[in-house]
Image (cartoon, rainbow, N blue to C red):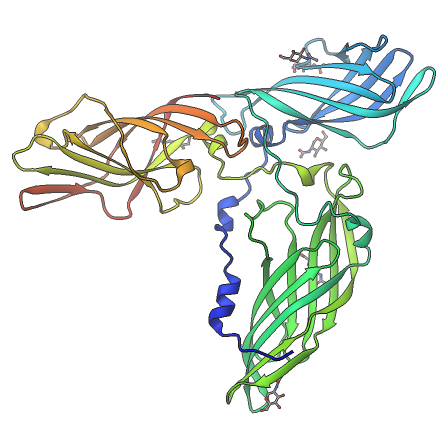
Length: 489
Ligand SMILES: *[C@@H]1O[C@H](CO)[C@@H](O)[C@H](O)[C@H]1NC(C)=O
Ligand SMILES: *[C@@H]1O[C@H](CO)[C@@H](O)[C@H](O)[C@H]1NC(C)=O
Ligand SMILES: *[C@@H]1O[C@H](CO)[C@@H](O)[C@H](O)[C@H]1NC(C)=O
Ligand SMILES: *[C@@H]1O[C@H](CO)[C@@H](O)[C@H](O)[C@H]1NC(C)=O
Ligand SMILES: *[C@@H]1O[C@H](CO)[C@@H](O)[C@H](O)[C@H]1NC(C)=O
Ligand SMILES: *[C@@H]1O[C@H](CO)[C@@H](O)[C@H](O)[C@H]1NC(C)=O
């Protein structure tokens, strides 16, 4: 392979995939509320059936509470189950035995107050699933000892079925679990720029791309080299898609020695192809000496590259992770829906009023964005309206004006409609807004409506050519909580 020259510019371009800041996907502490909105479901365990009695255990995955149920079956009809020892159980189930499956229906209501201590949220969920069974004359046994997963649809606080999120790359690829016992990697691209002063390697950088041959996961790694000491390289997924929330993420660490061209890989990946009820996290390592060809490009620079090379590694350990967890929707922040239910607030910025002398009415403009607890995007939407009272002498206004959208920043965080009232004397701004969230269930957006009041921070006014402009400081943003929130689909 003829080495070609990779400049710092191309390396940087290769290394800055167009992905949003990973911090924006920081994981919320998965508590009752977050789990209820993302993984409302039950695990059915310990199913047994003998004579006309069926018993099983239903574990609510959102609340981590388990209910023991028993039912009397009768022919091929739906029968109600009762919670053992509890007549007032909020979990209702019914069962129907067929030749090779037990069909189950579950309803449950529960309350979460972890994120809203003063305003507990009521959840209600319904789900249906079936469990393969093998029956003889008087007993049926489950075909597998594994739990089954019954996903639910929420009906309260509003109808929602959280969308699934693709699991970590390759987790369900045929052979993932078995093949991971003998891992191997293909290094399919290597580029080194070495500062080589009279045979002494004094620094440089390395860009290495490799593929896990079991999962097909591709990582792009970059490292700055100092002398011949082994350097740790930063790796990221080589995919154009939106990154997963930081849970069950594939992690790759490379160490590269510029003196010997020896590469060590330490990777963590996931498999559940063998059985989604028994997913595993896998830790593997490998070491290889890369076959590189180098050539001098100038007095003190050596460029090295190599043909693709495959090397085998070894499995360090594998660790079970909770049943079905690789296919779960992920609890993430910011979530438009969860923020809007828990503590809705809007961030304002770029407030400005303009009035011309001799006129009693002027114009008002402000930037706005739903606050999801993440950093301000820097792209608020702006609303603008002219013909409204904005001068102090005009006094307080009691009129409401519909907002007019001037420019859209982040569409998902922009009110779909609003009305405002501004009192210039007190700099008090009131807003009544409607907005929608579809981050958890794209097919069923949740509509919210609420009111807020805020005092615009200090304004700096200037008059030129008979035109008075009053504005907040550039870049200044402030938040206001939304009250009287209503929601529905
Ligand atoms: C769920 O409950 C079980 C038993 O009550 C407990 O051992 C486990 O740690 C709990 N899991 C979580 C995530 O709280
Ligand atoms: C029965 O269910 C109710 C409602 O969830 C609960 O408050 C109570 O503690 C349960 N009783 C028993 C004995 O499990
Ligand atoms: C669950 O609720 C639905 C709707 O509220 C109802 O039609 C169904 O009969 C209930 N199922 C059980 C097992 O209680
Ligand atoms: C560094 O440059 C010297 C010539 O000055 C050359 O012999 C040597 O192979 C180069 N080192 C590497 C790692 O390419
Ligand atoms: C591989 O990385 C893990 C952490 O991701 C670390 O605990 C382990 O010691 C590393 N193994 C080797 C051989 O470097
Ligand atoms: C806005 O809501 C947050 C979170 O609920 C709360 O901590 C804060 O005190 C509220 N701010 C005002 C001005 O009410």
